Image (cartoon, rainbow, N blue to C red; front, side, top):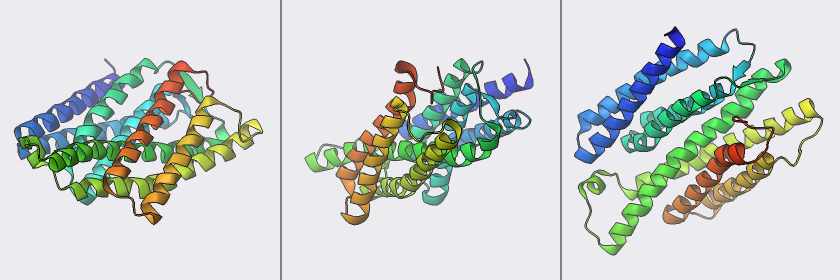
Length: 273
């Protein structure tokens, strides 16, 4: 077993422990288990960061496509740790830890597929296009988890259904709505930067802005839905259930764009084909 394989195994184990601890801590209402979940995820995130850095240094951006999925997994946890630091919302770990673990494990199906970027645009592509889009996806994932819990709790409260111990440990509905607000306010500008840099890169690399690629079409659709939600929150005062349902749909379309199109449709944006 080489160093990379050892790091990968340790990261999977730490993310798995983070997932188990946050589920057990939430179900059993044990704060020490929730803290163990965070520490496990932090340790895995540290190794994950080092692994990504070592893979990039000296690679001349001739990276496997699995690397991008690992970067997406890393971005998801980065957003989680940022929101946890700012808002102390441990319940977001219920979304972040398992998703990050599954993406990281899934990345190993693509480690032999290489995808070299044009040298002159590697920095821009990573920083502005992939980086911003992945961070935006991470924000949507957090808002998705918060939205699901918001809708569940609101329905129970309105119908006066008895709350479980799990429900009683959850923060107020306004807290879930705040996660939605932060995700939309920060996520939409990031997504816009990612889209704009992608179009500029396509024009310079391929001589055209658009190529009718399925990924481009769905990504533009996602941008319009994101813009609509951003507008509704900012100017129309959207809060609560409407905003929660909208971001759940937005995340579902984004997942389809990221996974569904890559698997079932031919696209030159693919991480998988």
